[in-house]
Length: 291
Image 1 (spheres, rainbow, N blue to C red):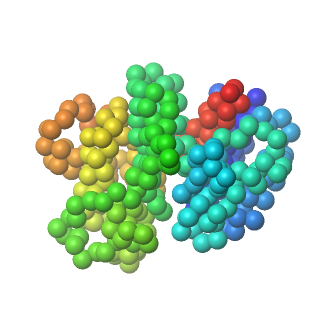
Image 2: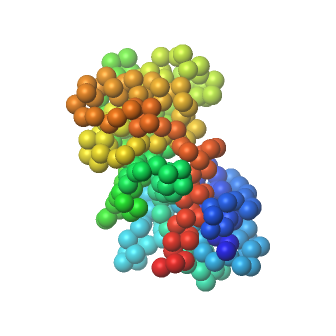
Image 3: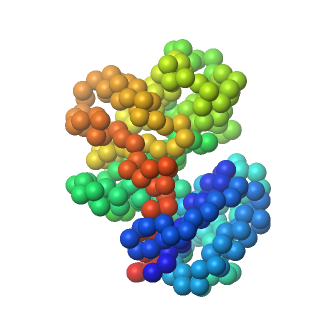
């Protein structure tokens, strides 16, 4: 069985074809340009595979997930220039009479990590997945289902207590300024320091400041949802950075609730190279096919 995956990011689209064992058989990526050009490339890619049975799309957003909405399948009021009110699923359905699953990019990654945890025989019923990259978002799963009813979670835009050494930084979120995304996403390095994050050594104090904010987000989701674990992916995240996050989490939580071994609670993805969404999409496409 051939299953299609679209990880639609604000910077690039990753399209892949795999099987019911979640193995990638073919993969390609291209820059995210205009909706017309990018979606045409997506359609042209999948047209190569005549036996495709279902597709799952995990997209940047905000997106409309309510199936009773006339805008279901749309990217809605995104700040991504040119992409607001894009009928993503509708465009795919013009060329493919197939089951199409539609969710957020972080939900796709969360599902991929949930599936992999099951394959690794981890006894978990819930997890939260954060991506910290060009933007910040999170998806939550409980008993195999996504959290979110009238819309998908926007955990990247929660408000935080400011670090005393960071009070002069206004944040970069166009909507909220100093929300989580506005304080820890990849572009904040350029805004704070005038250089790319890859050029900032992990000994720089800015990483401690960012860990302080990420730890607060982890505490919020811990106290609200009590997940079995929290996974952090995205280009900003490394194991060294997560060590800082764990230390800040431990200090700020102050032993109020027990989450067990922090090295097993706040973790890097099981799927390497930020490929969680592709695995998740294969699993979601299979689930959509079997409905």
